[in-house]
Structure formats: structure tokens, C-alpha cells
Length: 153
Image (cartoon, rainbow, N blue to C red; front, side, top):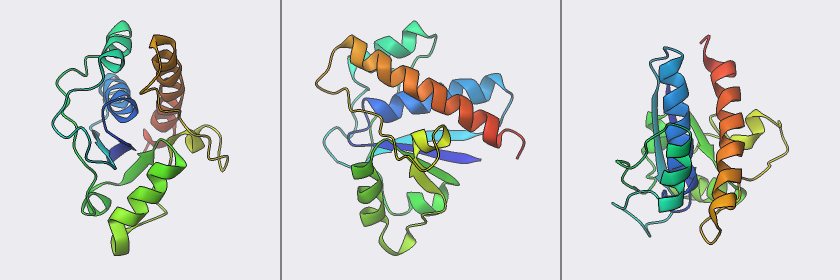
């Protein structure tokens, strides 16, 4: 199973989602490949936001080695599932993917918990540590649901 997490800059939400799911998949003995990307090119090569790193470390997950990259059309062909953080990310993934876009494997991550609600994970970029903690909690719950849904496949 290959899963890609996508947000805008690939330094706040998607590296957290990647780190959390990797951690859980490894603990569950699942041989999953989990990565992340951003729809924008603002932070290519940068480490995750310092508060994303801090919140992850508070939960025993080290995402400090992650380097931001931009989503490319070929990602749609490589990954089995692509989870985006918000509706703008979804539209951008579709636009970047063009003819390769596959709506059957692309979804907002919170739809795993709350099907068809299109609940968004808020971008904590301009926020404070509590905002990053809220994002962590949302992604923690969603990744539990992903593990539960796909661990038997």
C-alpha cells in the first residue's frame, strides 16, 4: 500500500499526517509506504514547520528529516491512496494531475472518519501551538481510521 498525504506547502499538515501514519503502520506491522507533498512550490526542500515538529515529538514521532516537495501528476499513478487536507488541495491535485486524476483514490482525509462531509483540516500556518495540536488530534483520529480500514487488505 502506497499512501500520499497532501497539503499546500508540505511543511505543516501533510508531514504530520505522513509521520503519524508511518508510525502507526510500522507499529501495526504493515509494510506501507507513506509520503507527503504540497500543491504549492513555496517550501520545496524545507523541513517541517517547527511547531509541526514539536507537536509530533510530543507524541514520540520525529518528522525533522522530512523535506518538502511539490505534488506532481505522476504521483497520481504511483500512489494507491491520496489524502488531501482541504477542498483547495483537492482541486489543486485534480488540476495538477490533469488526465491522470483518479477521484476513486483521492479524498479529503477527514472523510475517512466522517464520510462525505468534506470536513477540512485547518491550515495552522499562522497559528500557535494549540492550533498545531488541534491538527495533530484530527490527523491522529483520521490515521486510526485509515489503519482500521486498510490493515486487512
